[in-house]
Image (cartoon, rainbow, N blue to C red; front, side, top):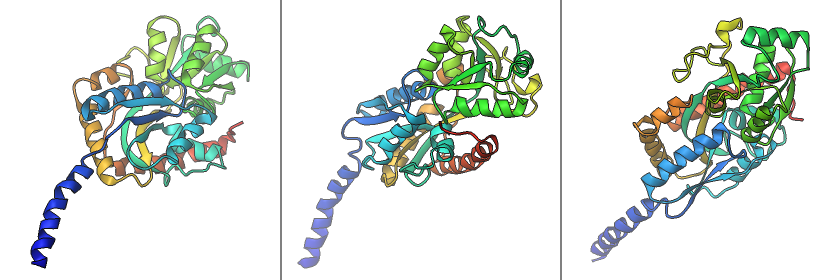
Amino acid sequence: MMRRRTLLAAALAAPATARAQGAWPDRLVRVVVPFTPGGTTDILARAMASELQEALGQPFVVENRGGAGGTLGSEVVARAAPDGHTIMMGHIGTLAVNPWLYRNLSFDTVTSFQPIIQVAVVPNVLVVNPRKVPVQNVQELVALARRQPGALSYGSGGNGSAAHIAMVAFNVATGTRMEHVPYRGTGPMVTDLLAGTIDLTLTGGPAALPPVRAGQLRALGVSSLTRLSSAPDIPTIAEQGVPGFDATQWYGLVAPAGTPRPIIDRLNAECTRILRGDRLRPRLEAEGADPTPGTPEQFRELIVAERARWGELIRTANVRAD
């Protein structure tokens, strides 16, 4: 009798357990973007949120929490409940660079987050305001910067942002010095670049290419070793006298550490399907983003490797957050 009761209890409990495990998401999911609207992080987050909302049947709402080079928004996610209802679109700056710039972070970019998936690799595009900087290519820009050290200003989405570190790498590789002007996000930075408040930037294709195509900015080169398939007329920086130059951005979704593995696996599977599908992938590629889905473990390995790589550059160039 006792054995029959035990088996009956287990049988009754099994469906309840299955329902509980399958309940996620059972309410709104926050997709935190640690920058202001308008930049590549925001663009990719909104694209993925829209697709995930349709796939999973719950609202995926982008929440912009800009400030301090992405550390404020990252802290929000690191402290959030690990229940799958708060995730973040991170990138090279927030996950690999900031630990070297902000030594008193209340979180660790490896141990405080559970990687979900790498979303995309995005080559940066070196663009200038043609009304302020009348150069036609990288060689002319380098020559001008060397003649006038510190006279040219470049903008970024904040200290430690992808554009900031890419320009540090460019200055080191070309022996130039330009003035860094950090913003609270790529959107306001591009606005000021269009207005002529700053001279240039080296930022992701999704944010840089639309004003280039509109004739408002001039593209001098891309930061990858190969040209963009969506903009093959723009030469690489490497082929313009800076051999081997390679400073691309990468983006990916993370959750708070401790988020249950079944939730991580489901998010990874849905994101992989979305990024390999015929609806979003062509749009991302047209904007200069190369979808790169993989496993959570592969994304973690990338974060660890990139932390080491860019940490060396930051030490060599003596880059500071202030």
